[in-house]
Image (tube, rainbow, N blue to C red; front, side, top):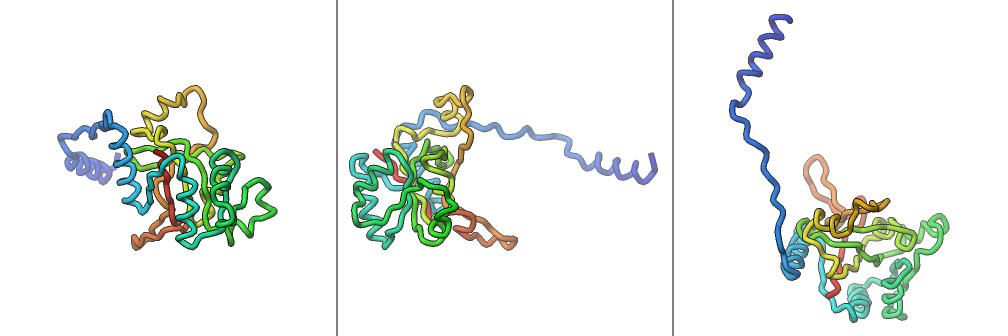
Length: 213
């Protein structure tokens, strides 16, 4: 070994901390009740400009149709299934809703240029991180939560878990992993080299979670 290399290694060794602190031990929250879960989820979402609304499970569709009309939004995208059917029945003539039920190649321009919002379900919510868990499928493809400027996710309060660890145990993911699970924490955001934060660059700039209570 050369003398210069020996000297470099000796300096590195001499500058090495003598007492190495152990890494911090993660301690997950324990025993949050329902109201604590909702409060933590809402707080985490609000911190990244996500919006959370608590709605009566029998009235959410009417409330949402009224709220979107109030905000001047009309052109929306829905999938297939109970959530889409319920919302379409409530929206009536107030909103122009299109179902995602044909190949994207035939209406890509409309999706990217005309659709103002999309309404989907959410597989679960994670209170600790303020995240939504989505399982896109043929009824609600991934583009629904990726392309429109506003994404509205409908989450049943019974599906709000403390954290990811609790959810995968309760859902028994070990027995059947999803093929395409997404964790969404707030609207799409990114920052450039000058640390200027911008929203809506790689996805929706607005995210609204409806917690059905």
